[in-house]
Each structure stands twice: as C-alpha cells, then as structure tokens.
Image 1 (cartoon, rainbow, N blue to C red):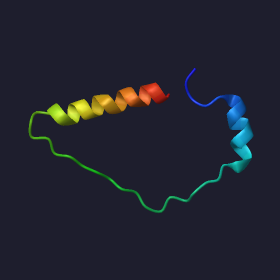
Image 2 (tube, rainbow, N blue to C red):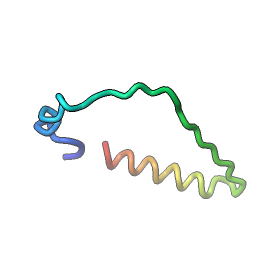
Image 3 (tube, rainbow, N blue to C red):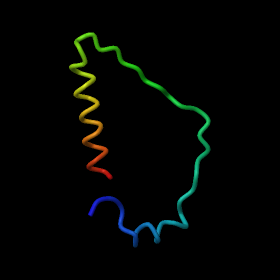
Image 4 (cartoon, rainbow, N blue to C red):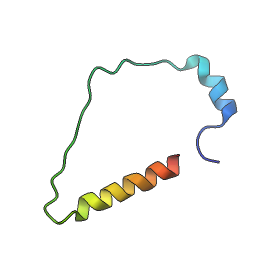
Length: 53
C-alpha cells in the first residue's frame, strides 16, 4: 500500500494547518541536445510521482 495510512491521517488531522501561498517559483530549462537531459528528467519525475501515489 502506498501513501499514508488512514489511521495516521486521522491521528494528525487536528494538527495539520494551511499556509497561504503568496509566491510561486517557476523554473525553465533550455535543452539544445534534442531533449536528452530534459526528457530523462521528465521521465524520472513521472516515475517518482507514480511511486509516491
């Protein structure tokens, strides 16, 4: 099972707060090698996101 167990979520639910987001950072990358590095970086990001889901 992936993610946080329901029991843990119920336990910490009263201690979770929210933070107002007032700023965002956007990063960009120009890859002049026909998407070699950026493509691999994107694939790794997707695989990590799938693992965490």
